[in-house]
Every structure is written in C-alpha cells, then in structure tokens.
Image 1 (cartoon, one colour):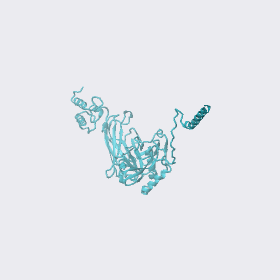
Image 2 (tube, one colour):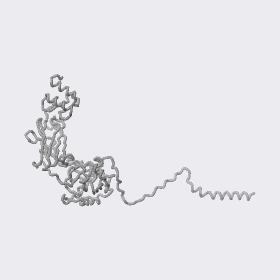
Image 3 (cartoon, helix red, strand yellow):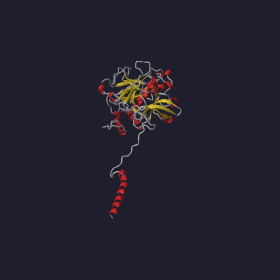
Image 4 (tube, helix red, strand yellow):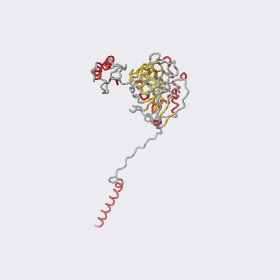
Length: 400
C-alpha cells in the first residue's frame, strides 16, 4: 500500500514539472504587453513638399513702393544679397536660370522660410515682400539686378525664366525657373513654412494666375505715354472724401503699370497750393499705377489745415520725376465749397432748378455726381426720394 502511495506522488510531481515552463511564459493577469514600435528608416534626406493645393491662408504679401515695413513687422530676418549690375541686352533665359539656381546653395531645399522673412526688392512697384513674395523678389534681384519690373496679365507664350507669378487667388507668389510647352518649373518660399525648389505648375494653372511681374521688357518710354486724371465728386466740402484717379497708357493705348504718378493741387491761375500731406510743392509723392494703368488715391481737406480756402482749383498730375517738366501731365477741375448749403446738389453755391434736375437724375440712373452733404435734406444719412420731395418744396418756398 505504501509503495502505491509513493508511485502516485511521483507521478504528480512529474506532471507539475512538465507544466511549469508554460506557466512561466504566460503574462500575469491584468498586465498589457507594450506594442512593438516599427523601426524608422533614416535616409538622411529632407523630403520636399509634396505637390498639391496650397493652404487657403495668405502665404505672403508685397508692400507698395511708398510703404516701408514697420520695424516690429519683421520678427525674424530681413534678408539681403549682393545685387549684381545687370544690363538687359546681356540677359538670356539660361543666364537668368543659372543666376537663380546659384542661390540654392545659400537657400537650400527645406530651409525654414515663413511670413517673418522679408526682402527689400529693387524691381519697383513694390518696396519688398514678406514670405513667398520676399523669396521670389530675392531670386528676381539675383537674376535682374536693378532692372525695372512691369505688372501684366499672364500670357503663357510670353512667359520666361525669372517671371514672378501671383497664384491661388492672390494668395501665393512663385518665380519661374524654366518654361516648357505644357508646364513651368518654379521656386517658392513659405511652402509648408520652407523653401521649395522644382515644383511644377501646369499651363492651365499658370494661365489662371492673377498677374505676372516681369523684368524682361526694360523701362517704359514715359515720353511716349499719355496721362489723364479725373476727380469725383467735382464739388465737395471740408471733411468730405474725394477720389483722384490718374490713368496712364502707352502709345498704343495699353495700360501702363508700375509707374510713379505725382499729384498736386493748383489754383485757378495754375499756382501750386500748399495742402496736407505736403512734400515741397507736390502733395502726394510716388503713387504707383496698378495693372489697369491707374493711380487711385482717396483724399479729403480738413478745416484744421488752414492751408486751402474754399474756391475753384484743379488737380495736377505728372509722370515720374516732378522736376522733369517735359514729361506728360494732366489736370482736372474741382470746387471746394465754403459751407454746407442744403439743396445745392451740384455744388455751384446756389439752390435752383439745376439742383432738382441733378438729384432726379442721380436717383433714377445714378450716373452723375452730387454733394451728399447738401443733398441729404432730411439728415437721415442717405439720399433718396424723400430728399427730392423736400428739395421741390424748398424751391417753391413750402418747406418748413
């Protein structure tokens, strides 16, 4: 009997020993094994930004020629390069391409570049640019030096290396490196917050660009251009805003962009009048023509100025340097009214039937200018048929 018990104990011991390794291999209850992380492949190469739609936010902008960046606007870096002395007749597509590509050593693929990066441009039209605009201007100067730029509508057949395209509904700037039959190759800043070389845009994408800045055409022959000016409204009181619009066209009647237009005020005798803002005898310096060949500037006189009295004057405009009197110029008359005169719709300092006719025409077809202050007879801030009724009563002596 004792031998039988010993045999049973021995068999139980052998069974426990056979199960023990499997028990050791099991995870303890309530413990989760960590997931294995895949091993990263380190290629040592910065991946360029993938082609595709750009972010919807504005990725960079250019400053008008007369507007310099405030010191606190540049939070990171104002970039500079050695701007070469370039002559237009020496340029070729390949030279422009090579000049831009030479900058890749200093501004390599993937270099951090955002809207905090600024570059001051030598091409005119703009004083410089932030973000994508600034990088395009930098490469442009590297290729063209200080040659002037012109702003044009995009013509794919005329596109050349070094042309700057404004794309994505005026949200992004790129500079053309090479032009092919169905696409272009570009360089750009602030693409995924960095510099990117070699992205391609299809011909269709290029033709949808907002405009192109080109420096291949050289300076405009200002002496062969024409300039005209209008002022609206032609009669106004102190503190009322009016708009001066100068339009510049070349000898073929095409709009001229990127040119400087000077505004000044003259009295009836043609003598220059001191006004604010004031810079010698010219009041507004360096207003640039836009892509439609227009320099548009809203303005108003203040009573506090004390520098211009009510009366008849004219706007005087001229191209380029104000000291060169032989360049094209133009004038347009206007009247600064002395005080508000309710009912004097046309601003001739009298209230009569001509004012009634003018107001009726304004309300029917809105194709004529009026003095808003004098036409708002009920003082509700708008000019409408109620004012026409009051003017009619005023003329027949029935107004209260």
